[in-house]
Image 1 (cartoon, rainbow, N blue to C red):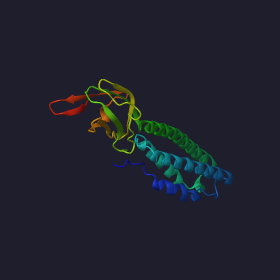
Image 2: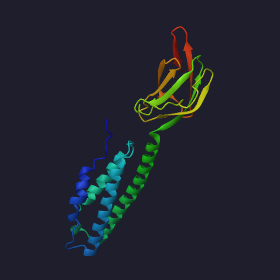
Image 3: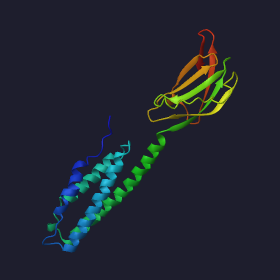
Image 4: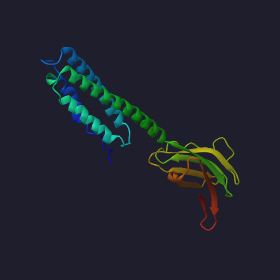
Amino acid sequence: MNKPKFNIKSVLFILCALLPILLAGCGPSEEKITQAQALYAQLADLHNQVVEAHKGIADDSLDQNLVALGKKVEQIGQYDLNKFKDEQIDLLMESMRSIMDSYEEYLETINQIKAQETAAVLTSIPVTLSNNTEFTFQTLQLYSINDPSQNANVLEDTSGFAPGQTITGLVIYRDVSSAPWKLVLQSTDGTSHEFELAVKGYSESGVTLTLTYDSETNEIKCS
């Protein structure tokens, strides 16, 4: 399901289309009108920055507050400054500055959330693998099912993974979908053994996996 975003399309058009409404006329001074127009343009630019940044996060906790700010921007865009006095425009500009301050704060929050979500995309999990079988393995591949091309032989340039040995320093990565990983071993007799690792339940502090041989089923197990 796509994450709902605050309704911004109408506001984007208003920011551009309603700017001409803020025109000089009898009543307020031309200087005050110019100041309000310039500030409104800054508000529009900052608003658009927040919209784009918000699209880039999965977190929806800010949606309600951003909707409320968007409505304020829309309301300001509806004002006809020809009917305002200079003092009223000053108050309006103060409101615009307040909205801009809020947008600045939300932009900072969004950037922090983005950094957290990016860091959480891949969680590294150290792996220790023990060989409690009577078999020696000549190849060992460890890779995500989403990226089977990354299947380098960990045992390359070694004498193999012998009975009673333990390998440390292996690392697997859990992505946001917790996609399983594959552990593929080939013993010296040419027999391949494949195991699917449910990384979702693994602790970030690491996991220890042990290879054992079940004589009843004539199978090697990994647990």
